[in-house]
Length: 113
Image 1 (cartoon, rainbow, N blue to C red):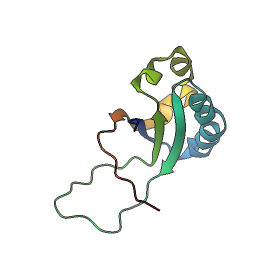
Image 2 (cartoon, rainbow, N blue to C red):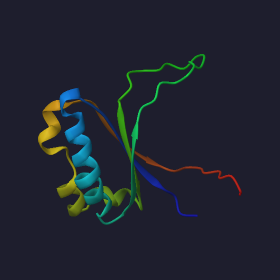
Image 3 (cartoon, one colour):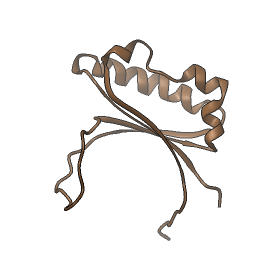
């Protein structure tokens, strides 16, 4: 089985730019990133409040938006195509709490259907 590499991006955006950013992100940015060599998929998520707090788990500041990209390997991050496609362009001044992290799968257990 081939291991997966995930690129995780989280951020907040000021309310007055939120609709504009979401339109650009969904229609322009996400498709252009997924079209880069080595990128397999891109999914966007909006945060939900946890219904209960788990004992002993520190829940930090929550970013409202998260994007999860699946890559063939970490090398996809280094391609010239991705380096040109990445970034928030004119939205940078309106962002906060931006984090970018890469993870390589170490174990997967899937449910059999």
